[in-house]
Length: 206
View 1: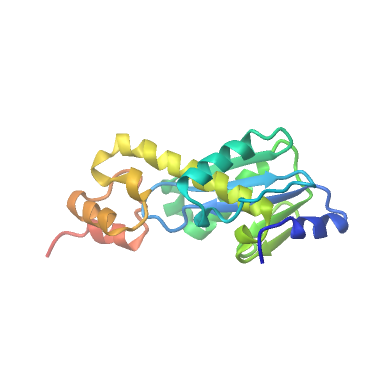
View 2 (view 1 turned 90 degrees about the vertical axis):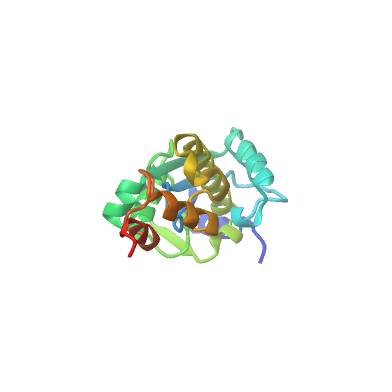
């Protein structure tokens, strides 16, 4: 099934006028924040390319980001939860908190939320959780693009602050390059200390 407004239209028929799509980027990396975004699209929105951000090239994501955020009829917001809070809350709770904050940052509160994945509890309004929603719902797909582009840009900025780790290349994910740099230099301030590969890098060599 391709991306569409099918789920948004169904919710509007039930009386939910403003429906926000919500998604996150950065649950899996060993370093950097988790970022969530919330997007409310106009009722007749269409797009030939918009899809799950993971399926898109970096160039396409950047272009779609500019289109979405520059559209006068699209409401959008994002929220960032930093590594220290991830370590304190755990990554699942931190991701849910980022989603709640992104939703709360919208200029006008929607009536209903379409959330990628499983339900987020608690949540301030009724929600519909869609597994694989970023490939089904235009609203969630738009949120996935904003979250992904925002997080990638933040990690590129971290390259200048922590040049030894190659953050601009791997964006904090546990690639072979990142793991090698982690072993060579140990964790830096933006590494998630609660994640196992980072904890292992803190152990003294035998």
